Length: 112
Image (cartoon, rainbow, N blue to C red; front, side, top):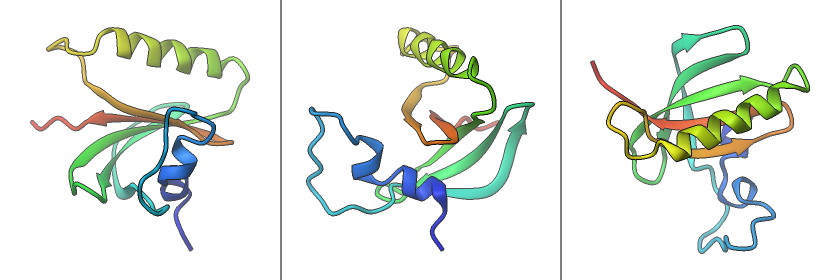
């Protein structure tokens, strides 16, 4: 059975409906979720994921959709992170995806 995270991050589903995105290779998972939990909160957890194309590790924040108002908070967080891209004190947001019951924010993974 395929992990829902892997399904959500397949090339066609991740950009479904985006007219600017035209996949040039077959549909396949892009990220594989690892078991280690880097952090946890009331509505989210952070885990390591590996990009299956580049073999690079990232940190993914997985936010459970529990309340209607959380959607606007997540979008504000994503917008703020995009505005702060390139700042040396802010993690780089690599990608953002949404599933029916979860949001995924993929960040660079810091060491140390």
